[in-house]
Length: 200
Image (cartoon, rainbow, N blue to C red; front, side, top):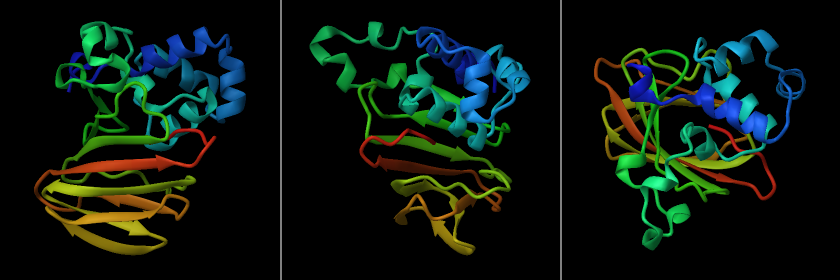
């Protein structure tokens, strides 16, 4: 998938960091991500894993949707009559690749989304959230739109197929993967706790 297809998370991170007057050193210290890695990500030379992106996003204290509007044009393409900050039109939706070419996300939440975020997660065969479990204080859930995937909660594997829905406490260590031969597509929903940072 090309950068034009996926948008540029790196440009968005750099823009947000500079707008907040945060140095690379400060962002590295807060996020726990090495300066060299941050520099590569901002220059679109690195493709951050889910865990790395989560750390950066929390350190910047922005909603996930902010990382999907790298050029700042998302709202400009929506008419004032639509109350742009409450709507995300299909034409302003971007597919962003995470970690490997095997997983992409399409943000569905409007730019105003703060505590509730939702997206379409596409996982190719072999795609995974990574070897380390994710854990974050938020309610998570979703609906499998096509294919099948495995959700592991606290070491227990759940096999979910098209039409199945799920919900769990995001603080529970969890991973997800597609060990099957067909791509999986699912609606992924995150309800953040008040005053919490945002993550994937």
